[in-house]
Each structure stands twice: as structure tokens, then as C-alpha cells.
Amino acid sequence: MKSNLPDRSRDTTVVPQDVQDVLDRNAQRLRVFGQQMHWLDATTSTNDVAAHLAERGAAEGTVVVAESQTAGRGRLGRAWFSPPGAGLYVSIVLRPAGDLSAHRNPAVLLTLASGVAIAEGVRAATGLPAEIKWPNDVMIGKRKLAGVLAEATSQSGALQHVIVGFGINLQPAAYPPDVARRATSIEAEMGGRGADRAQLLVEILAAFAARYADLQAGMFDAILSAWRARAPLLRGALVEWETPHGLQRGRAEDIDATGALLVRPLGPPGGDGRFERLIAGEVRWT
Image (cartoon, rainbow, N blue to C red; front, side, top):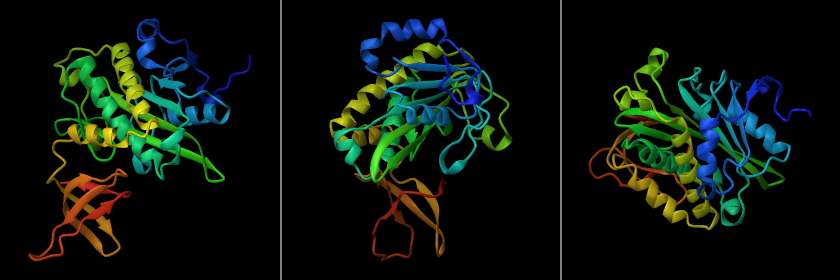
């Protein structure tokens, strides 16, 4: 039978037995997520593989997992360092309906929901105090544990599918220096004890299934509230961003109903006190 995977992703294996066993035991919690799973030894990008499958009719909830990526990417086209054995690199095919499909930017809501689900899944599987940093980072303290990339595809103005991808660091690795300064891993945070990758993956997928159900039911406020509860350091944090007039600085205050970051610019006393809504581009936390 001809493979549905792109040529560069045909080095496939069956789902490892330890993972399949945990998937089977948690099928009810996972709903549609993981019923169809592609487990790859290596690929360019799991988001690209999942998009390829979605364009060929893959069902909602199809999951792509890779042991390594050669061209993993994050927000703003940044490379996501994905060495063999050091992490879990996962993408999910979604076909939003109802209120979520009609939302003006479902990918933003799905990014927020995914951050919540990863933080919840990490806590459930390991006990680690995972938190969230806007817009797509999952943190332990001041170091990055995981990131999310949601990519939507529309045709003639109608949403076709969204691919939600995430990478989570399981073990320390020989990261490039700029990454090493900011990154952490499950194993490093657990004092050298390895993570149970099967349980971690299933807990994240189960949390995502519950949060996705909330979004499909139009319960956007529940997602925003859950996100805020897991971003305790957001309010008052100093941030910088580029504007057509140069670098601007301010203090983060909240996110709004669309997931945009609300920042109060720093300025002279007696300023107008208005918020800036940041929805794209580079935001640096200082």
C-alpha cells in the first residue's frame, strides 16, 4: 500500500508498545486524539507531515510524533532544535467547527489552549510546576521547556484545518549556546530522573482533548481564565517590542478576549495610560 506520508518521512516505525499500552488504557479520556498516530524516527517537521496528511483527508485528532526533526520550527520562523532522543515533537490535525471555526483567529485560541494543556499535562505526569509565557512558551521558572506552533489553512475564506504542533524537551542536549541559556528539560528539572514519555504524551493529549472540547463549545472565557491562572508572572512584567517609530517598552497587564497581549507603554508621567494590543511580531521579555 502506498504511504500517505511525504517522501522524507517514510522512515517510520509502529507506535512503541509502551506508548500504545498507555494510549489504550486512556482511550476514553483522549476522545479522538491518538486513535490515528504516526510515529516517525525522523522527519523534517511534524507540522509539515500533519499538514500533508490533513490535505489528503486525515481525520481530526490524527497525531504525528517524531523522535527528531531536521527542520523543526517555532514562532516567526525560528528553528526548533530537535536532536534525536532529547524531546517529543508532536503535531495534531484539527478541523474546528461551530463557534471556534467562526472565530476570527482560531489559531491564536488554539495556541493558548495548547499551552494550558501542556502545562496541565506536565504537572499531571511529573508534578513539575509548569507555567506559561505569552504567546506560546511553557516554562519552568525562567527557562523554556516547550513551545507551541499553530498553523491554520483556509480556502475561499473557509477554515479547512489547523495543525497544532509542540516540542517538549525531555532530556538535556548539546543545544546551541543561545538556546542552552534559555532551555530546560523534564530530566534536568527532576534531578536527573528520566520522564515517562508515554505517560507525559498521554496526559498532554488528554488535557488538550478537554480544552479543545471547551473551545468547540464556545467556552473561550474558560480557556482565557485557565491561561491567566498559569501565567502568574505576566502582570507587571517588562517587555520590549519594535514599532515603526523604534523600540517601545512597557509593562504587560493581561490578555484580551482574542488572546492579544495588553501592554501599558512606559512614558512620561501624566501619559494617556492607554494599552497597546500586541498580536504579532517580536516581543522581548526583560
